[in-house]
Image 1 (cartoon, one colour):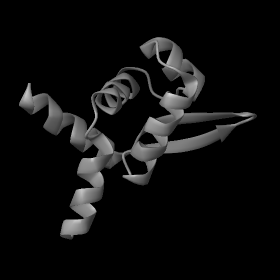
Image 2 (cartoon, helix red, strand yellow):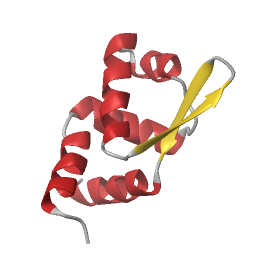
Image 3 (spheres, one colour):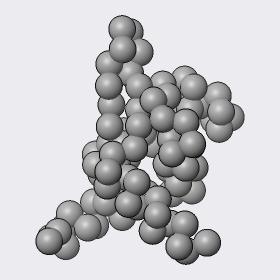
Length: 89
């Protein structure tokens, strides 16, 4: 069972409309770079990078190095959060 602070970290991780968009995008197209995410969402690279960093801190996104690129995909916890978010729609 998660502790209250762990729950808070997770909730803060997706408590932003851009981060919800990123989670949804990574569900549709896993293993995207920051540049690809920024392009698809039409946002600034630095903004995308910061949102992905916060998602990773919350444990919702996993990173994998491929050459000079870092690819991102949803963690199991990220997939659970996305299911939760879809129930809110």
